[in-house]
Image 1 (cartoon, helix red, strand yellow):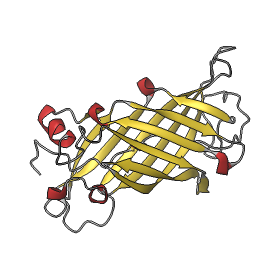
Image 2 (cartoon, rainbow, N blue to C red):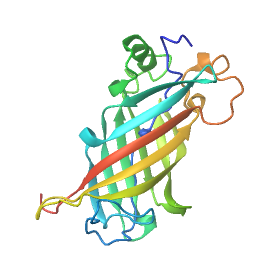
Image 3 (cartoon, one colour):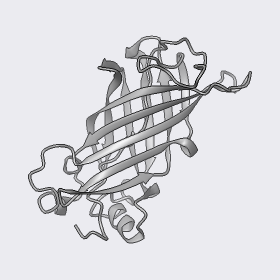
Image 4 (cartoon, helix red, strand yellow):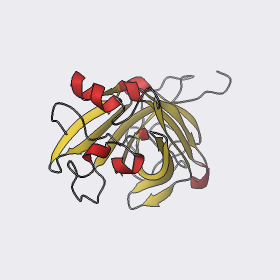
Length: 226
């Protein structure tokens, strides 16, 4: 891959990418929904049950993609939207995130054009990627979800790990509670049909994920009737 050109197939998200992709997460409330005094929560904590809408202005989906095995190209997606549903039971928690491919940036116009083009994301044909899942589980001091990442016309289960960072301590009466999460995931771009020209020359026999995703999310609780 030309160092000025591609990124080596940015496997998401998101994201989900995601997105997740993110792009985020949810779970039962260990602390029943009141903002944490110092704005932080323990790894085991989760927000109060309810639906939370992701704020794209304060949500950051970063990725790092392997370049010639030992190098790393970094970038981000600037438009991440979706909903986090927190249930009383971990099995009821759900995530639905969408990432706009056109919002990808690596701070290099030529490379970004190449990555969004037919050799990688093919944004004209696949303008968005999504990450959807239901049910979470504890993994060490984090939560995890086995959601489905749909990217470049391919849908695969991609584990997402996350933790709840806490609720904003200065929420005014009658205003939505704002919460924050940090999530991470890893994917192999070849599994989504991205960057076929790189699969050997760029990555060699690398068997581990060649794209790592980090997502910081802020989301607002949905107030009934508004």
